Length: 255
Image 1 (cartoon, rainbow, N blue to C red):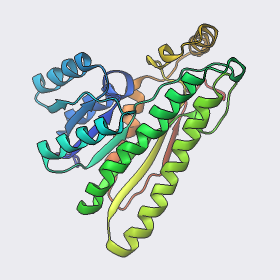
Image 2 (cartoon, rainbow, N blue to C red):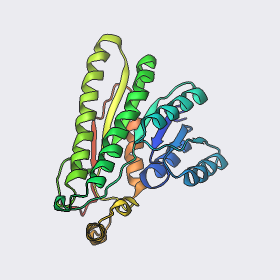
Image 3 (cartoon, rainbow, N blue to C red):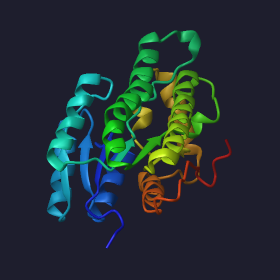
């Protein structure tokens, strides 16, 4: 028996990469997984795979940059399962380019998805968890939330924001826990280089090829399953244990 038995988890960005790998691992532990992303066909395929293997999953396509779509997705989850125990804010994009290129549409998109989308998820889930007095919010950031690199300035800024939001929320919930005894936890997972589709969201050709070249230069980048394992470890700790941040780099990654 897993300590996660029958818990309900929402995973954003579940159509590939870290989100998909995490959904598969949680489903093996009898977690009811709610899969959300924009690519409905991939979500349906993943849901069918999980169900065929004896797990429970529903696909709820959603653009997390759209506040009303996030609200509707949360409401549908609550209607289907009656509670929400885990929110994994994993969705993110990385259309990097030098600031001098002034790709303002890319800036807007990163802010909308990486910051506002994350906040929308928290905003609609938090009242439910506060009523339950239990829950776990995991925000997937990046080593870019600690280190700034050329061509990734805005992306790094959004990931620095994720760290700030997580720590601020943790602080507020810890203060409230002293009053009402809630056990709502907040964790930031900060991966280094992971071999996923994320570089495909880079629209600037030179920046995309440069980043892909850097990934290839590493002897052994992380896999999505590596990060899923880190998330699983965090979720399976007892409620008294607050793991606030996990930074995971490939062994060969220097910065």
